[in-house]
Image 1: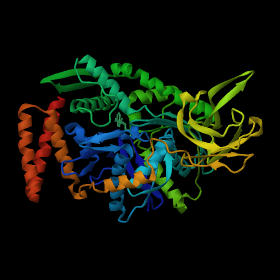
Image 2 (image 1 turned 60 degrees about the vertical axis):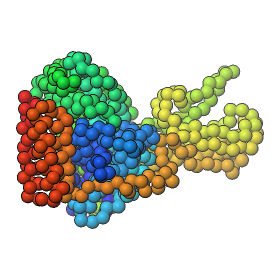
Image 3 (image 1 turned 180 degrees about the vertical axis):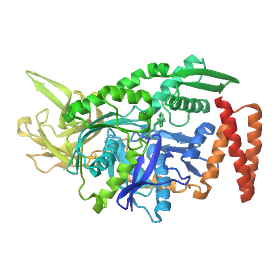
Image 4 (image 1 turned 90 degrees about the vertical axis):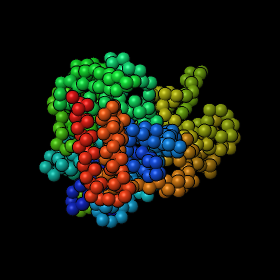
Length: 572
Ligand code: AMP
């Protein structure tokens, strides 16, 4: 069975194509959104999802979130005394989703279509595939998130018998993607995509945190992102910032209260202030929209719909900006949190050649320009460090393109082909992807011709080959291992290490969440609330340890009611 997975910065979802439609898979708590958070508990169990998110506050040193931002970088997060790369943490989330899907379907799941931001580069895509492999899933297809959103909407429109040009505006927890799609006769053609890999709901939270720090005069060290090993105070503040941001969707102002150093710091965030502090972020949403439209050669007024995807498009400020940019209200007939996962299920259905989808054809594009470093000659001089584009951004994939180049010097024994991704004229401003080396027979430079071939597949993975047309023989085809990507041996090693980590039994999920929530509430409270909580947690834990089901149910219900009461009092 193939499942679809939206592996999000903030939340992840699994989906299946079943009985001619896309269906979301509930997790062990019955929810379809599983927070992309991982926490290691004292027994060495791995908690994934809502319980882990609670532990982000109570046990920040043992928990990690927002690791999608570290994909393909080789950077690690420390949980307790172990360190994990982003693909390992992601694999734990995938493992939980796989187990949910197996429980839901009643059959084993071996394969997944996983979505990635369109702007993910080669290393990030490879890391995503490896995360799947570490979780015991074959990932033959990685699908661009906005393309997945377009598939879900496209199918919706197609079923309604409508053709047209759609722009998908996808702002998630950590990334922003824009895609322009043309729908006609069952064909969904992605015409252009653009985006920003470092722009999402989390950045708006960081802006609120900075504002609160200044306004309420509190002293918490700054941190560059929302990933692991932050201090508990930092995590609490991030949570409060997110709550305030969400509250501003339904109210005119949000009261932020924060316990620190024995005092309560307080500030009121109103809509106008939020708009002011988020202005620089809102402004960054404009450029990818303009670029995607220009590249697609579709005019704003010719778009039939603007479609919102990603949880952060729920912010009124973002919707307002979208409405101003396009002169009309965006569509939101599918829940923005779910649309990408639903599209992933459609792709899984396409992969199994499901009859209900036999008329659907999807074409996608390369989201960025790919090329090599060259030395440019002009007049009597030359300039090095220039990018020679080989596959230009928004070319339809799969694609294979060839360029011929000559060596810089006479009798050069070898050439290094350095591969880059990006839109800048100088390679130093682009992202290096790797290099390959080609041995040459020494010749005069004008007697040598080298052919460089770029092949870019539907998953956005690149293969490069270089060949001397004169010597004929020498050819290298594999891009040298990128520092951010695990080798086959390393994958095996990681797999063995991860196998020791166990997910708790599915039946225990509710109790684990309740305990995690109680510990977080304890952390956030003071005085008598703490005493009450401590007593109730002890009862609940004892009942669980002694397997006294009735007593556990009773003390669990009491604990839950107590946390609700304390939280309601804190909000007042
Ligand atoms: P995603 O990556 O698509 O799951 O989007 C997650 C982001 O959406 C997070 O930054 C959330 O804070 C944000 N988000 C979800 N719901 C809301 C809401 N009601 N109001 C504002 N932001 C939201």
